[in-house]
Length: 198
Length: 274
Image (cartoon, rainbow over all chains, first blue to last red; front, side):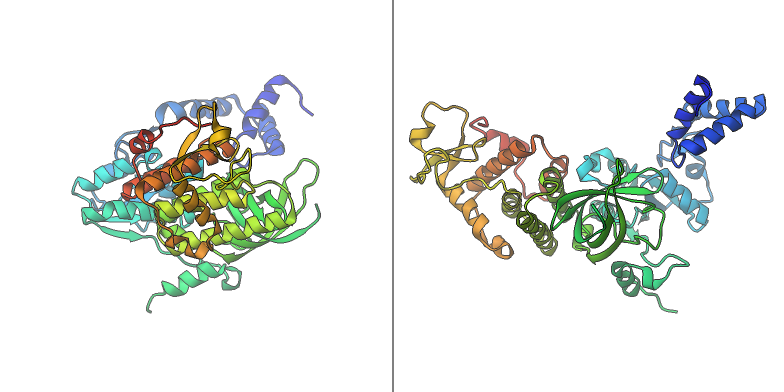
């Protein structure tokens, strides 16, 4: 049961966010009705400024408030190492691991021919230009390990091969905490194929 | 629909909400079926590695309730067609075939026809996975896909008077009626596609040969250009639009230097489509 049009409007808007259904949206709306004015104002301002202040980095195409972004300007990062990811969220996941100290290139997705997404819809040309610039020595292809991500990685590898840079693909394997008995036979096969010496 | 256990081929996979996935499946007994896989993108155990494009699965589906979609409960991978993941050209041709099946495969249908369609889909993907495609084979695969979908064109007899189209030279083909016209029936009709009788015979052979040996079929450049034009027109007529994946596939063929450029294709279009 709804109480008034302003609450209905807010519930409708919140429902469109990922992971939020009718119940959660209603709970959040009623929480905001009872929250302090400055808290609600701060939230509204933060959302309003988001679209105004976030831009794409001119080098790596990550989301940032200043272009070039902090990662691209960081002098401690290896200038010759470039990791290619599909989306900004993938970049964030790799950064969270704190295991990569190179630079990034965000493609904007992976090939999805059935949805009309090919090389022209992704930042492939920008990647090739960046690599041809001469500073890059190794490109790590970190597109997702699914059919579309693999096909994209192999297309990029074909395109980059003549530039002479070292090419690598992120490893396939079992997730930590996973059970072999639940894994599909393709994943298990790749784990065995790509085993490492101890 | 109660619980359904079946083999299935994934034709399309679309992310839905935060962690779900909507799948278009091709089933041997039922044709196309749309299902939702709840939590598919988050779960490491339930659908681990199984819900990728091209995957041949053994599935358990719970039937639709009121307005909700049928729900995928379990999926086990039978075959993955791995070479389609690592060769962009095979990937592109595989996607093109899946899109064609997704657009034209019926939901429900005569069981024997659906089984034939399912077998074709698996055989075609296996064929594409086994060797790098060329333009002749792509054309024959497209034609055979139309055949498997129940849209086989007539390639020998006049579609109106049913007499065999004879002669050595140019014939005319009526795309909307799905076959050639003899000289008598074609009189006063305009906008027919011109095609050499040899091209029709080659396409006929492409339909009758075992799929495993279609790479033995070869066509000269002009016959191939004619065959491509004819099959493309037929396919566009039945689908009612250009497939999204066609542009990507054409581009990869061009980049590999094995496809005529669009300009060459257009210059040989002497007749508008019927």
